[in-house]
Image (cartoon, rainbow, N blue to C red; front, side, top):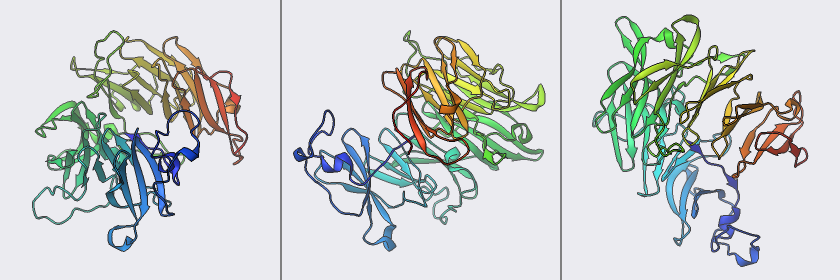
Length: 438
């Protein structure tokens, strides 16, 4: 899912809706104020000429604190898409979008479809049994692990628990509910093409088991990808993550690469292999975990090379890259190009957040407790910039031309001394400070 950035106040679009707001230095005198009032809190471009706007509700007791308005700028005025939303502190509702779908809500339960101008509540709509009472809205699991947006923005899936897990899938108003087998609990859900990939825990007479399954979204039929084995084999994985020294490790090791419904082809024009990746305890050494990939085209499973007990796995469909590694003291980062089959490794631990270079030949990794590292897959170069300039990074971004990398790093690893914005070349080398402390 893609999270949306936000701009407070009016922003360019609200002041200059009559113009294109796009190229050159456009003087304010050429624009027109189209909305006014202190009740407007956010203005976010959804598409090139469509805005999301939040506005205080004049009667918050009836429908909630704020309204979400949608405004295609070619239309005369915005319309209310969702009522009762709250993005402000201390609530900070999450917000993601893909294609025509916007997803938000305290539990990622509210969805709006721009194409159909329809909304849905993924927890309260579509009862599993007609006439039954509203299901509990308690959050027994991490919401991000039980919801998925399809890459083309034409479907959303969410797990709902109302006496037994069920899957809600589709787009408003065409939503369907598929009940799961009795005793089954979803630990993770993601799309694989138009279908769903599920990590399921199921209670049996011999104890709990966990496996990976593919659900046909036209029928709800499940097909096995990874045979269920005792849940202990999957401990600390797929949503059963524990805190390590106060920091939550990534534990939702279930995903796909090369399988998107709008999957880009390889440079030679052929489709990449569709791989499902997951992790579990290593059957050859129960003290370690191992990463696996299941090749959908060949029906074969193989263990990922290297990486003693991988605890971070990333993938990018556009770059055709799979990255995995361990954050142990002697951590390593491994990568595979799905199109060429080339694999490589770098002598540093993977960061918490990956950034993919637009030319698809490289990536960087960073995190609030990680140093910046960059990998050029095309050349095999492993770059580790000056650690004094790359600690406590809160964001990093490649330039569209792939020739620059921008990041914001803490000025002091031991104190809150502000951040500095650094600009380096496309290999994360020769950084230059372009701002002072903030």
